[in-house]
Length: 88
Image (cartoon, rainbow, N blue to C red):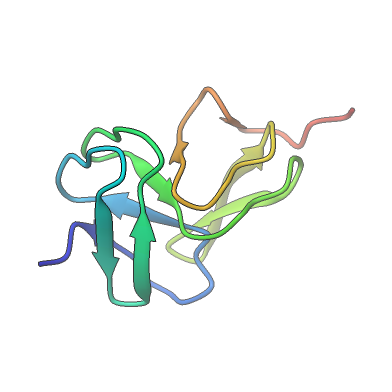
């Protein structure tokens, strides 16, 4: 059963349609992701590594920028993503 939604193959995140536990395998239409931490529904999980400053893409749209390096499987939320590209 799928636990996350990905609309387009170029999306860098998937949206959890159910809460996910650390080490749980999250199935999507575009591959599986192992969660690195607990992720509440309806938050995002990284589908691939995202470098600091890189756009975060959801439903083919840039929804923000990585504030830090984000590893595949990490929870993506306000603690590591912001509305503007960091200027470091």
